[in-house]
Length: 117
Image (cartoon, rainbow, N blue to C red; front, side, top):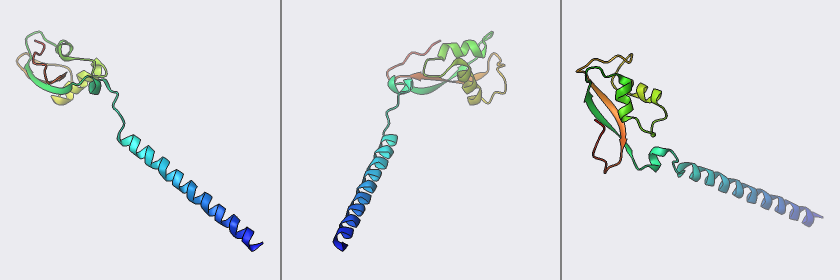
């Protein structure tokens, strides 16, 4: 009877050890997957990086029509793009004056040389 009890104990210990090994392997796979995930965001697929340009505001220009020149699909939407420009330039509202300089973000590939006028 003692041998049978010892055999059951060994089986339980073996089952516990295998279960712990499987759990550790699963956790390790999850951790590795999270750190090596592929970016599916369009700015990573496009091979473009965010750049900045300083422009001088011309008479009659608004923040919106300047933004339309530099906006691209890498930004989520035009409203967020305008807010980013305002944040970069420490602006509290969308008012701009002719002659002022603005920092404008845009996306471009390394080979891209020409910017919108």
